[in-house]
Image (cartoon, rainbow, N blue to C red; front, side, top):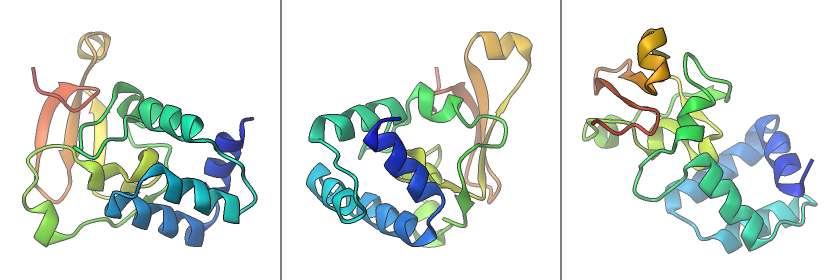
Length: 147
């Protein structure tokens, strides 16, 4: 297991650390802040490792989601969840956003899920993206994009 993977595993089991990571993500903090936090917890992570994790998780400041990010949790999710609903922010969304999944897709909103529609749609890479608070319910690719 790489230092990045070990750090992420630690974060999944440490609510305080997860809250700090989420705060970094919400603030749009640069890699150096993430790396410093990892170092505080005994993990030596390089900027390259952080960048690779962002790419594999589909993390971006634009709110666009990548295939691995959604595919890894489709149908209910493997990531821990928390109530990330904020009406002042979320009421502006019409599709999946950063606030639905968190930094590196580590903490999903309790109200967001992806569901494979059927075998044919699944083979085509289509899933239903649902906000249980009624902000969106649409079919798109695993990235959250609508064709």
